[in-house]
Image (cartoon, rainbow over all chains, first blue to last red; front, side, top):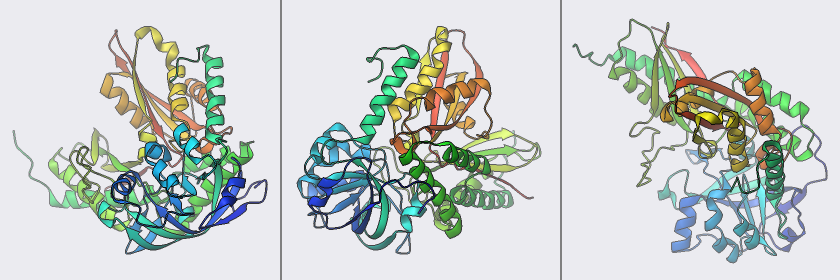
Length: 195
Length: 279
């Protein structure tokens, strides 16, 4: 565990996930164990067209394009989740209970998660740290290439923060709103300046 | 005009140096960046932000221990060469760098990130049309500097053609860039700011500013950095004191009717390394 005050005890989650994700609140610390499936832009597009290759019920989907060498996971940190804003609804509809990534997601995803699933944030750039909690166990859509394929990964207590909970709580949005207020105060601009 | 034939020994030496520089850059952060991260972690007051910074420092130690890349987005290679007077400017330089990138992709290893912009077809070895980007400047020794650039931060970079009367608006433009970016570029960020020149020069200056040491800032850079940190976006957009580790500015003269300003956003993993080519 990294040095520093970890605040409350982490909640340990294991896939397949169920209603326990509904108890989480934005800002909570959790660890995730079990199986996780990587998916980026291209994999989402293909799954929409051809179906989901894994059992989505209670599954966790990880926004990640790892570095794989000779069937081993070298490093595997999160990619920017917002690129998947318009591509995530069908996964939650199919029973996926957790999206894992970095940077947060848009309002349409916050609404989609409501009452059903959560968004878990992994520290961006921490690819060696993430890989230390992971073991590669298979792959779908390998023809999409290393970064875009759906890799099946076994994870052991991956350290995460609840970024968006199942009740509309969005830590990223709260931070953004505060930043916006701060910005307009500092530069004496009105709220319409920034989209 | 004599055309210099490709020099195989020069090409091969450059390939070696490029391969080594990339491995070094991808696995180990420069000391100035590491120092800035440690300072930020020590000063941070927000609990979640402290945890994020703790993860970052742990990740850096793990990458070094396991000799693996710091981040799986091993970026696209941006390469700067300094060329001494006795070495001709020739295709051999570009061939050598390209070969070094190919090798580093297999040996470090790097994720193959370079695709055709329209078909999105991956070239498999991080080279491609115009890739790697190689910038050559005169120098005393032959050196290769690599700056592997990830997409999360590159994607939120901005350029603005401000009016000549808007010089006072630059801090606002810089802060607004981060306001729009939020947690997407993996803050705490380093911002390279290019002011002046032309549309394309401002962007090039902003990228070059990312090569400057981050542990010193002049008053103007500090002002820009304070404006960004006041936003409270924090590490990964989860809130906190540490949004920017540093802001570095490079300037050039510009047209009396122009004020180009470019902000090149760089994630906390500001990876760069320089290797001298031994001859």
